[in-house]
Length: 498
Image (tube, rainbow, N blue to C red; front, side, top):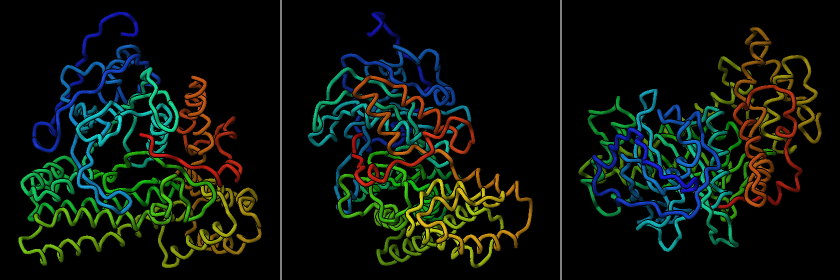
């Protein structure tokens, strides 16, 4: 133990329904021991929300527990089985190759939450991988998850980051780490695909019933549970991806094993927030064809849902043709659900509380000028509210040729005027949905570089503090607000590190 004293395994108050209700869908396993665990960061607020003793865990005991060296006394560690389409190609067996579900807690709001380790060593699903993670990707996931949470977007979150004291081999030797992740659940589209690929209808049915009871309890008892689940997940994913699009977020690796049934964002690998608006933006080093580009995300969401529908077909109807017809009927609702959710978010960003037929064209008109003029996504929308307050100069300066947006501004002002209402309240509402601060890619990279190569967590802590308050005006924030030089963006790539 790092402090030379023995530790007693804590009790987390786990109630492990996945292990209890779904035998045959996982492998019981233990984390690999690490040589010198050191707690880098405990998310104390999240720990308290989960009903955990943050004071006891914020130190050597937490390092032992969140590295996997010391399992909570009531944990039932397991590696979940799942399959998945990765960049369009189907892999019938993936599974938790470097992750373990420790168990589930009921948080202070009565919500069931998974607590899982990521980077905790090899499992039967590792497929020749080492099962480890490096500090850089762990801190990236911590930062992006907390940013998404602060933006109000459904997401998994980091509970802790622990350095392991080991070097792991990637392109070079990197300091190792383990992330502790909290999720509504880790049930994925790929989980259903795993059992469908094996013709295991019994486990498919149990998984469907379990997922409905856990995430959509109001649908328990539906005439066709599989269709009810498909419809609920379709709506949840449509709204989630509209959330991503509204803040310029690019997931980067929307494989079916990275799409949750709960509607949370999961698996922050080659993810990033877009600077200048360009629908074809890709940051992933392995997405050579742009499959998961920003502008493709809504369509990929529907594609993934179609794979879920295929997996559920045996439970929809005994006659395959009829099953396909019924599932397709549900899938066709996605486009309208996404469009409605996207337009709802765009109206809010434009300061519109009512609806007119031309609102979609108004939003698209701004996006067209932004793309042509390489305007920054975040600042353009944030500064638009200044146009209501009487000074659109900062907004106009986001465009290479400010006059290019003047015609659109006239249309927007006329649309806002038709609604009337208090200008101050409308501008404040706009500022409440368009963030001032996001985890800018260059800031994330600086924080990671300092932590990995200099052992300095101060930039990480500073950025974490800033992204926790994305909408607030406050002095001293300029360094976190401004976009990077175009030369940085042109060469910036992210990697699937965790």
